[in-house]
Image (cartoon, rainbow, N blue to C red; front, side, top):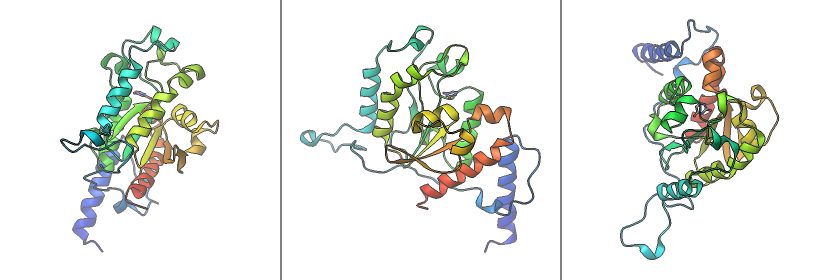
Length: 249
Ligand code: URA
């Protein structure tokens, strides 16, 4: 049982979190606020088909490490013209982060800022995502962030099915290489395409689904949350479930 000072400290952190996310009030019926803040310092590990690193001089048993495997995948994509998104994009946005992470985020596709900077989630939605990652107890660089399609759809329209299908092998391979313990998919398009489902995001979110034998927690897209701040409560519930899963729950 925590002492009063400990409870107050946790409450303060929780309130700061909600205020940073733009909440203006607290729903008083929630009873588990002290459980909201989870401190995790390391989320690396998990041995896979790809080595986390190779021992020096072990050339005979060389297994590409995850970083090299991702580099090779990026090389395979090359200056991609496999679909019509290549006609208007400035840059391919491959994805970035810690290849050895246990937690991977998958969004829909690059927007304007991402197209310019060749980095995922660097615009306003990305800033909110970074805050949420931080409040989960991680730094952005500790997780891996990718998208379903790697090129910006013109005028930020939804990616079309042929574009999603063409890009799918690359996100599949990214997941295979990184082999995270949990994936959080962001928004309707990411969830429905990963899970090959037509179920609305409001029904998919909140429980785990399967992608390549990895649990996927679909949640709302941060851009949606910027427009509909009330959805942040449900998103935070989804993140709590992910944290539980990462803790072994
Ligand atoms: N929205 C996405 O789905 N992905 C990004 O990289 C940026 C915005």
